[in-house]
Image (cartoon, rainbow, N blue to C red; front, top):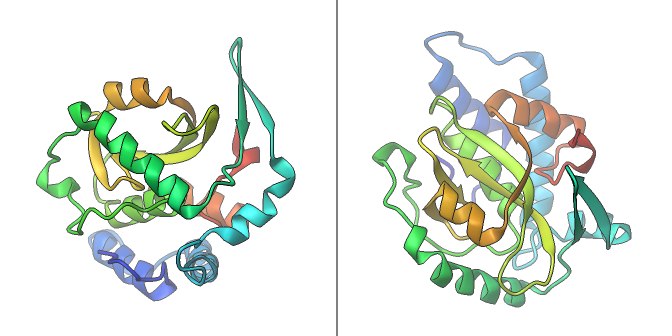
Length: 218
């Protein structure tokens, strides 16, 4: 299992993959190996920033200050969060309070084995890591979409994990929630979901980043 401070390295992921797939095969495909190498490079860039670990991604997105996402007949005005680390952390703490009634004790196999530290601005990385660690759970999905946190006036990009019994894992809050309550509170708009194999392939397609993968929206 990946621990705090671990990089999403080729060696870590390869070891994890081999353990999970030893009953079916003993090696990874060339494509998976390339993805792991891309993810290692991306992860090393992310962890260099300490309190601001995805600054590189945010810099790439500065020209995307406002986007209009169309979902059916509803238009949602979105932007890239440019708030400080502390502002996002404060918002996350407020969300934990409001979401308390929907928080659940997860199944043993869902637990992370880590302390529940808040991970501001790391939703894409944390959700990816969780699915990488728990890929042996049938039906687990990495989900990208939009949410409306308590301290912001509009929907923002977000990633979370959906487990097969309707449980949600939020990588920023490091907590588990009932799906309906979580969706209602955050006014969730689900854009795309990925299984374990798909998330590596799309990660490579987008340069080895954890997300958001904007142009993957159909």
